[in-house]
Image (cartoon, rainbow, N blue to C red):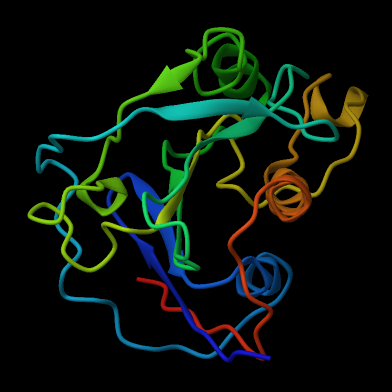
Length: 200
């Protein structure tokens, strides 16, 4: 069993899980971990990303955006077929806080997957496969998770109800479903003994 690590960094508008092994990612989604230093090679969000292939959309059964549409992720496999390095980037976007703000959000790209394109260009240098742009993680398998739950990716609601204004707050459940889906359908990961994280 290979011991690998994951670094999680909260940025101005997004959260990136950087690591080698989906087992570590699953552990981070489900539990708290010890802290380590953030990589100094991560560039700011406003840095342009060039020379990259598209990330392809996958909607995941058992996940929900605020309005009940399926949530999911965008993925690009590493060009290195032996790479077990993974980058998870969770899109930011703030939170809704009452019926009016959450109902309004459910009608936007931050509350539904209805308008999601079939593919996306990387939106942050840490997702880049360009070695100049991203010297540490250029050969990683990339997962970009769009934000559509209004709950900072932390919600545990399995169903909509009157108490939730008919909306789904399922961000954490979505991450569990996404990691489970990746483990079932994507190759290139190692089991690992532990995962570590840094939150800022």
